[in-house]
Image (tube, rainbow, N blue to C red; front, top):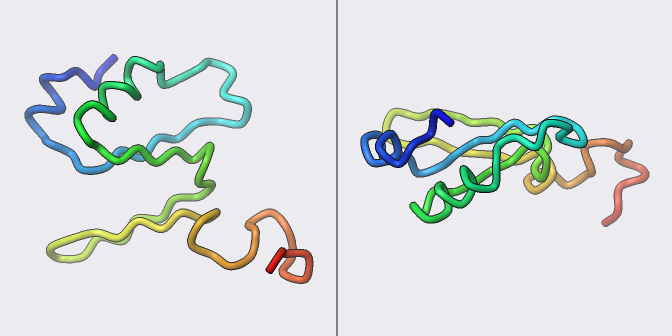
Length: 84
């Protein structure tokens, strides 16, 4: 894998955005990769759980919005069907 401990030590990320396809037929990323990020206290945001992820970058920080958590209606159904 390309996300070695050496790389994580060098760049010291605070968040990992992971794109995981529907049903994840290849099983990527591996559980070992996820554990490595979690062991380094790096937030793990997966599109499998979050749906669309939008990152807004500002001069000194960034904002992450997850479709399934930051919007009032479910992303996959019309507003009139959304649970309140």
